[in-house]
Image 1 (cartoon, one colour):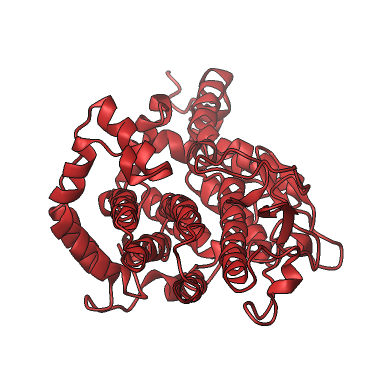
Image 2: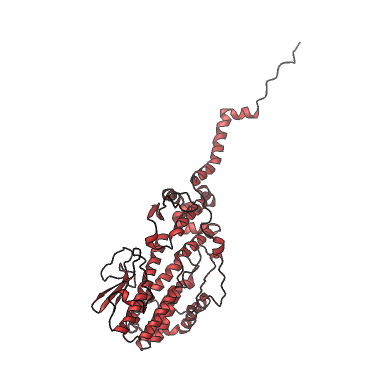
Length: 460
């Protein structure tokens, strides 16, 4: 008799199957591989503190301005009528020679170029009379935003200086000042609500125009009355200069806007990082969060001090390839608990930060030099007024107050209380700041190309 009640073997459970080495180990490897990008991303972001927006972004994004108030309304129209100078080396050299020298140095091509652009110049000069300027709304700017009109402001400044030199050669000195003043005012329109590039273009126009003005004021035929008018114009125009922090804020917006749209891949290709152009790869690397958060930390540090005089700022220390202001124990950086060393390591980890973050230190020095040049220009005009009244240049700046200047401008590169100084040598004087190295360097002042250690002017 056959026994049909034999005990059945228990079926293996799903869990027991997974615990078998032949199944569990390969499965564990697969899961580990799937989760490794998440672990790697987490390790890249570890220790990074997001301080939030580094300034009032909402209040900075939109500028209320009418077309009638906006200098760029005229600048755009003037650009549409601008005719180029022939690209020959001879014409370019002649233009540079005339800008740095006299109208007689201009050849036929340069003279024709100026004549051909009289209509464009007239339109452009109307724009220089405006006190407000907006090329683009801050909320619309990205790292790929083109700036053709701002770039051409340098061309119009050159044309205006040539126009002034031509009038000077005819003895029409008051008429010449109209054009020097226009070029000088246009320098203040490249920078408000603008990026680093726009601010630097404004600095460049300010420099070439300042040197042209100094050439103009040193002519004996310029009357005291005309010089007094010029000094007032230069002082009023200087008040239109925007804080350096504005450029930092705009640069931040342009980066954030670029990281959030389709431009990011194009930017990476342009910088040569083709291997990291995939959005998935960037995500694994912790980007763009790593770049954004570390930039916010950097910007909070800079915004706290960037508009303060140099002598009131704390010491600067390295943060990777960047420089930041040292934190005192009693005054840590607001909304941030990252030390300069921690911030430097975060910035070094970020591929996008290494590619895209601006050279903040360079824009700071450029703006400080511009402030020194503005101060030296005001003192130079005052010294020429003094000479008209007394027959010679003053020995010291204190002789200019209070009759000509209410106070002597501060030296941005000097110690606390330091002023722009006059150094007299017979019938010649040098008016300058100590410059970036903090020391006077004889008579070697900065020229039109930025060569020279001291920021200022030598007369005659």
